[in-house]
Length: 475
Ligand code: SF4
Image (cartoon, rainbow, N blue to C red; front, side, top):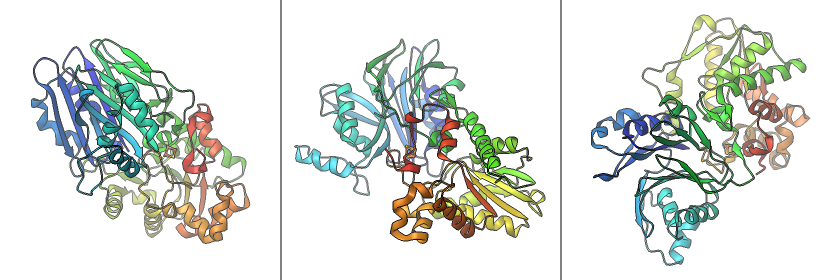
């Protein structure tokens, strides 16, 4: 997915942007970059590096002595190299983007057919999506019209930061607000961030949260709305369930608090239906399953335990290389068991979600091999039925890679795909069949998914403002 951080101040912001971007490292694994603007002598300075094998801080610390500036933006990118430095009729500006552009090829072709002559090509032949966004912005006469034009043209979502040659930063939140954009303030200036904890830790206070589609300009002295927020919002529910860092708040709702509440609601609703098994420990699949499990454990009064602990000193990042096999291997290497908490024990695990089930299957097999008496599984969100088309969230090439969709196909063929809403609801006959089939395939003693209503209750903001497309297929 990716994330960004920018700052504009009366003092040098190199270290703020360096640490601010670093605090977005859980959001991407491929490329990272920073661009600073020094109004006195150096103008723009930029570095982009691969972070596939080396964490952001280590990768960029040697660049720090060469950077100076009272303004800067930087990003962690899960896709193409960025931020880019662009020169156009709008001046020289830096640009970083987060989101997904599903019609990129069509936009490139439209650009050529309207007289555009060239893009730099990536080694894959594709056009860097941030360069494509720059080309769209440059088709208009000012940044605000250009950003709106780009946001209207793309299918997917587009959240971005522009740093202009006067050192000011323009921040634009996606039209439907799928991702958050927050502004922080300290005595010397302002910063713009995706994760709120990133600027709290750097001494900035909350100043402003952009509404959906809102465009603001931020400099050392203030925040100015250039284009107001729209009335409709669909912020990503997965920010709370999985993506977001625990210390962050989006729309005023803290991630960790939501996860405790979510686990508790799941246990409360299962207790009403007599579905809470008698277990020795409730445990979370590290990392993001853990707070959901804490909530579940305290609600059902079963002890919380950690039969698996993540080895963090040399595996500090959440999802490593883009190759699935290597990722599976890394995930396995990171999880270290505590045999004394497994042998002969009845365990209930809570995971943030069950997407393909590949890693979980291996974990469950390992638990039984290690002598676990029972393994019960709970997912902190409903069965995922659709791939995300807004944030490049899932790397799945096909929705049939999603375990729920695959099992529906096995159970009922194409007819089943017409009844996904029933399959997603564990109270319906089809929903019960899905639970039973996944349980059998994965070898769980029992399986439960959080309901859509339970998850939305835990998020706690107006459900109309939350994107649940992954589960419902409804926009
Ligand atoms: S489709 Fe899923 S991952 Fe994508 S924005 Fe919506 S809730 Fe988030």
